[in-house]
Image 1 (cartoon, rainbow, N blue to C red):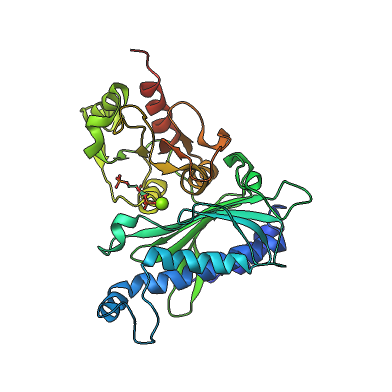
Image 2 (cartoon, protein in one colour):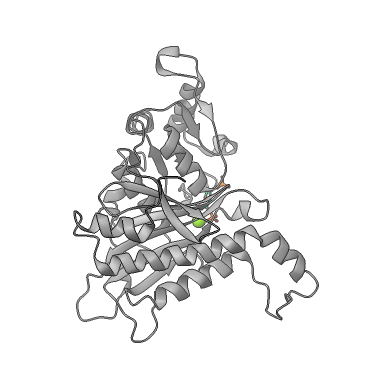
Length: 336
Ligand code: AHM
Ligand code: MG
């Protein structure tokens, strides 16, 4: 970390000089999000230990009830955002309805978050993450309504994620590039380690749950078959990588290039649909990738252009290097 001594707060104050979206309020809000993620990071790191201590009757040595890590993370983020003084209304993957903030703490922003994404990896010590998306409140004269949360991704003020991996990283954009910070566990501070992150225009890695092949439409199947066919000029066959945690798969895609796909599938033949949620999974990642020079699509339209209709709406997601995602779109839009 020698030479990398710019803390998140110091970096944000620098960025504030050139980016009017970075208000003092947003700096404060991101500081609260960083603080929540440090608490989650600590608990992710000792999850196994806490689980063992809590096994007997679900009560830990302090006499507190042991909660599942995703519920616990939700409580941490909710409480921290609620008291930040910057947010008026919140949505979380863990909660069905929107959540108002504490009385008297209302602020100018909304936040949608997935407190601990990658639930299938929580119990097996594999990377998981937190994702967040921040908008301006738009409804005057209210304390914040669902309409304030249901804004398209292209209206985001700020978005990002925290990856709890071999190190803990916070990556964000507020419309002036993508910047990554690594948590120095000893100091308890995020330091700038990845300034101005850019994604390659084309990569040679694809990331998809191929166990769903049977449930995809023919065009999606043909695209994945294409990526696996040999052609040295286009670096095919592509390498396959799939963690099963969006944050981890996205972070690798951002750094190495290529694309991540969770396409529409026909597991329910009557209702084909994607799995990932627009508000707090697809849209924030789409903003980050756009700011890094990449692109995110459903296969038919840009993720950032979708006007949400529900807090937990699902969308197909194809995200990564712009040439790869555009090519996937071409395959997916082919007429039979
Ligand atoms: P979750 O919010 O229940 O954790 O589900 C979201 C996760 C993503 O992190 C990941 O990209 C995807 O689900 C993996 O799904 P699958 O196990 O179907 O491959
Ligand atoms: Mg999730």
